[in-house]
Length: 358
Image 1 (cartoon, one colour):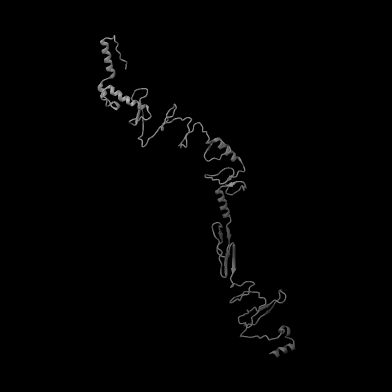
Image 2: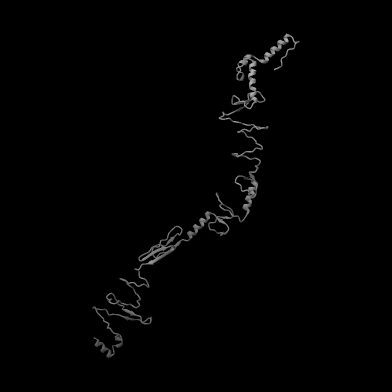
């Protein structure tokens, strides 16, 4: 709006022109009456200016309160695009402080580059570090001397420490957890353990296969006196040793005992036998107990054979003629020599003695 002046030397027409120009500068009063906001109650230009002027000091003060929650900025070009700043309805007094510096505001949902910023206890999700990381929380120690639980290590230091630890041939590792598997030239997978190495490890599969094959080869084969021969697989079957008539079994620890009952006759034992038949036995020093009758002793047709003092091919056999009746021969209570027809039949005195004896 240009300054309007009328000089004392101007004509009345000049005065009229300046007055009309002032009216154009001020505008139609009808537009003023239809205005809203701070000048809504103004009825003339002066009142409107006074109303606006009353608000200007508040904008310059710290305590100025915008009546709405929106601030719109037109920008360099007066068009249909504006930048609008809105505020969420506050539930308490909030203060947002802009730093005393020149810079660009970073937004939550945009991709921005932040330079020389310090983040205190941030939570970074899927962070991308394009150049590098540094600071007191990043250690570059090849020996991991700090042994810290709150800082990280550089790639170089991790590689150096790992290479140094794994390159030794006599390292001692305590409480190692292997989650996936082990492999390499020091781990053998041989079912027969053919390498027989004292310095290499074996896989679980090869160890199991070796033991299974070893146990399968240790089968127990036996052939009984009767029945079918058996094959006992020691790693999966049990051999049962059962007793028989007069024979029992027992076990204590690793000892198996097979015992004979006292009803069984043994070679050196003293037992009484009843109802037994001996076929071609050799009996040394046969003794009949006192009061025992001979009714139970039956001598067959071959008689009783006496070997004599010398075990040779010559024996003395005592036989009996086939009886036609029950006969009893009584041996007297005396020591004597038996008379036979072979030794005394031709001697008269012996014959007399025989007759005398009846």
